[in-house]
Length: 296
Image (cartoon, helix red, strand yellow):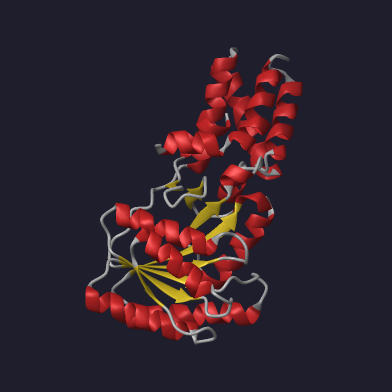
């Protein structure tokens, strides 16, 4: 199943929130009431108040300027505005590559790392996982299961070990074996826990010192079902580790997938991957047009 089919299936709940209501709305005709209700529909899908207002204002201007009248024309204009909101350069890194993965507890971080490793393997890249979550019981074992599924190596230490030491060993292994990608798992943390955020800074320093030639990405894993709280997480983690991209999980389990638009509107961190299922190949590269098609 390709991205389009998976994203369509994964966005059914959000589509029910937006597309179905939108179809009924067109029956009222294009009026002030139409725009007001459209804004409410977008907000209900967690597009966010500011982003929803801007999208509706742009649509109103475009409809007036181009004298759009039919449902097909207006819907196409709405899609164009949404796609432009979400369009950015695709994830196309150089190698060797180190990805530090962060997030709060329960967002699906370890699972996403396993799926991300599988994605790189599908691109013919070699991968090693660094099990730097040494706090949560059995975290390294869980990551090991995903390493086996993705058929990649893993470097891990005993529970309670220094996470930075795990990262050091993983980098040493990657350099010795000329591995393309190092993906670093970290302990789930609340974004307001200063000591845990300082630990991330220490890990970053180890990577910078030991592997300066590597390309660096810091990814935050977000649970799509958390809605607008996701934006607070992006801002907080961005201050601590300078985020480069986002992985949005559980998109198939929420009617509020519009949060992707809100995140893009209120932060400068792109959504590079979305989770649309439980399978190892259900982490997909984000594609703006397919996403908007999936909700409209």
